[in-house]
Length: 315
Image: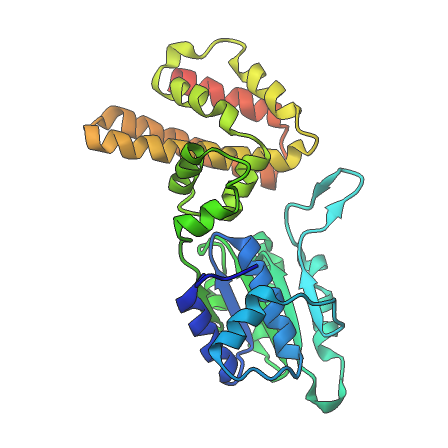
């Protein structure tokens, strides 16, 4: 991966942190968690190694272009794949972080540094987040956390207050489009760049599930309730059931619908369509509640779809 001046100011901030006494906890916040996760992994490898970095350019090259093997001095906490259910675990609980204490309490010669990467901290349950907070509050000079965070609001304020946080901004369109130039037409890429605020992470998910197929249809239903028929929900249920990993597709699908709604709402603001704006924002909030129920309560998605289109029909 070539950086091409990618995240210049963010790399500068990380370099300053690296050249100073490295803090116990670093939070990397941004939409492009694929890229940020690579940075986290390479930064961790650099922290535990004796690699000599003489300047900022070498540091940037290491962050974006290095390839490293697993190390006993790096612990990665991330959702595991549940073979029996053929999907990734939706949350990280206290049992998933119980090894962190043992990992950091292991004694090494020569003051060896150890790094725990949590990818994503957004996925931590409250009890797991509090367990991590307790470790951060009792720092060891050779123990470090790198916390990958997508939604800045999904991070305990107490963890934030004890960490160095770096916000990763929006990718330039050229860099964004370079990921997908062979797989999607430019018009749709422009649209995805607009609704995702330049997030290659979200775009990758939307392209993977081919949500482009339903975009125009769903926007029509938003504007014209009479287009919603008794079997409309079933059509969307059948569409989603075509995915082998439907459990992973559902929250991404809800996210996509919300971004479509926000984009349509912005257009309405220029037309002073107050009634429709309120309606769309109410639907956005309803979808948000459905998404949370899907994740937290593991509810049957067919019933969630029926609820959604009933709300669209009669709101």
